[in-house]
Image (cartoon, rainbow, N blue to C red; front, side, top):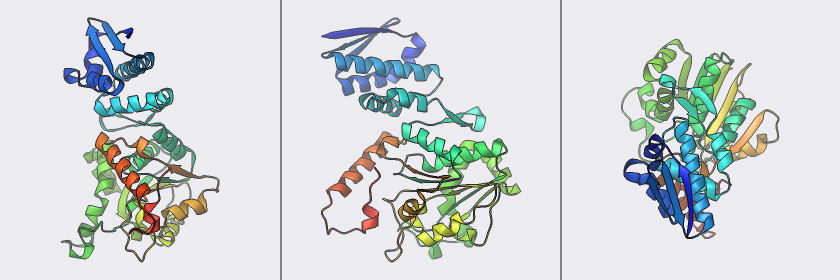
Length: 334
């Protein structure tokens, strides 16, 4: 039996161990160790030295997260465990320390994975970025956070957010009630959600009234020149190559643009081909254009989302040649 001790204050223990030791139990089950606290001493017992050392690194990392005044829940514990098992914990901890922008009520918006940190760096360094990745990886949220940071710093004068008004199969645009604005609003709601979370609803409404923030369907971009703006085209997998070309050529002086999308969730009709992957291939060698690919390791929603993404990726990989499904839909993120 291998054994090691760590020093934890009572406050650190309460936060790191979780309610009714729920976080500690996750570590015990994942690494086959026993964790016991006696006053300020935390004892780790395990059959192997590697298991004990992994538990020690996990607890130290969670203690550091606590000391940075950040929330620790089961998803954070799993993320730390995964990073330790992959030998990436130091890089992950560095990624989690960088603040992109102070959000509503001075809440810091930070990256949570190495992939997200690389994405955040690309957003700062490039004029145009194309980010491709599965659901829950923060593609849109981090783009909005960087746009808000640029707005606050005076690097841009407005934020323009758009996405194709493409149905996901359940509803048809023409049958929705209301005028055109009311019809397209449900498709743009995820953009409002990100803005409200970062800026607060009251500030978002003020910016919308002043025209500092504009949210509109992608078709409304045609014929415009967008100067000193941060432009975010969300759900770009649901746009054709010609539509994405139209959007990209709206870029004016002092502006930046981000195309985000998940090529495993294409809702275009079968006669229309998604242009996102082709756009990335065509533009990838141009200076000032960044191509970022996130994967299931970068999923930061509920842990089950990561498991769901993995399960669908496995199903796609196991699919036999000739089975149903358009070829461009079955592409996987590396």
